[in-house]
Length: 82
Image 1 (tube, rainbow, N blue to C red):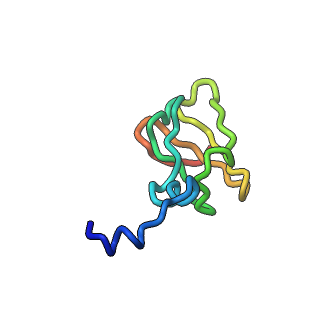
Image 2: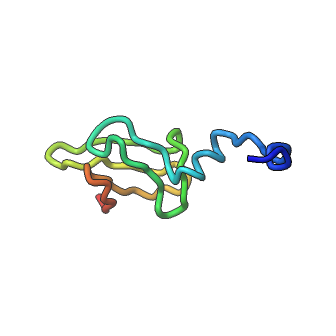
Image 3: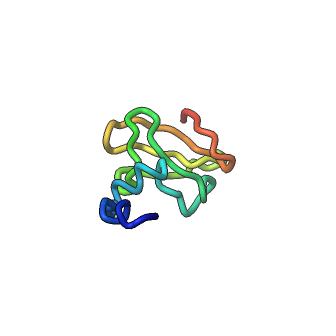
């Protein structure tokens, strides 16, 4: 990077970084290591999701607190409906 580009560099906030990465990385459950994003409203902030498991269902269930959309993610990162 040349000096001119360095002068124009900015530091991204955590919220900006989440937009770049495409979602938060879930750290537990069946969807561990998968990037999670609400496909209804685009929410990516981990704090705006409720996460739970259902016995016998090998998927994590998510509810977006921003828009109310509910969805599932399995161990392959495949999104579905509850």
